[in-house]
Every structure is written in structure tokens, then in C-alpha cells.
Length: 172
Image (cartoon, rainbow, N blue to C red):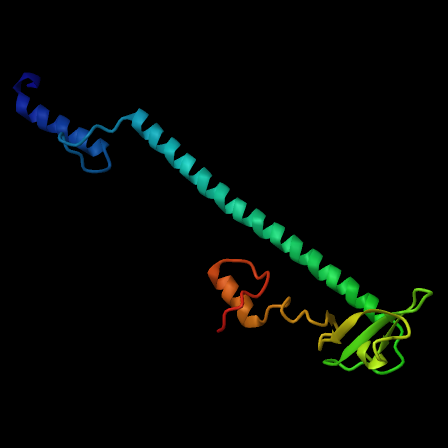
């Protein structure tokens, strides 16, 4: 009875067994799937992933550097504002007003409401600069309005992908 098997039936069973072993449809006309080719594909994918991850980490590193620079700038501004708040002042300081800083010969700093011009060009002590007291109680040197970008300038720079280091001068 074993010899009664149809040889053609054996071939059909063998082909069915082979097609069930491969989880996806195959064709004799398709290129062979080679283990070496798969290894090369995995290697290329690993390289591409490594490059993408490296680029993203580089962006993060640059962002961290920019944040460090911004933190240094903020701390320097805070230090300068704190020093100016410690200058002697015999009147109530009002945000939005401009005050003039002078230095006595002994090194003591003090604020005056009078500019050097109002002293007739000959102030009693060395003139150190004019400052505007901001609403947030920080000090801005007079004439630094162009150094501090407004909110629209910052947003415009962020949308361009640049830093908000300063005003670019074009209108909104």
C-alpha cells in the first residue's frame, strides 16, 4: 500500500508543507531572501538610527548651551540690578522713571533725579549712567531699548528657528 501512493500527491503535499512554513506569500519569480542581505539591511537601519539619534542629541546639546548662556545673562542682569538697588537713594523709586547714578569720591553710589545736563553740565560727582526702573524692578541702562527685543520680535525669531538674541529691525 505504501507503493500505491500517487507520486504526484506526494509533490502536492510537499509544496503545501513548504508554503505553510513561510508566513508570507512567496513566488519563484521574487528575489531570494538571503540571511546576509537581511544582516546588511539591519546594519543600514542601525546606522541610520544612530545618525538620527546623534543629530537629535546634538540639537539638545546646542539647546542646553543656549540655556546656559541665557541663565548666565539673567544672573548677570540680576546681579547688576541688585547692585543698583543697593545704591543710596533719598526718594521713592517709581517704575517707569529714569534715574541718574553718580559715584562719590569714596566710591559710594547714589541715585539722583537730576541728569548731568540739569546740573549745568558739571555734576557734583562722577556720573555713572542713567537707568530706567522697570515694572519687574530690574534696571535698564538708558538707551538700551534696542538691546531688549519685544515679545513680537522674540516670537518672530523663534518661528524662524533662530535665537532671540536681538531685534532685527523689520516691522511687524
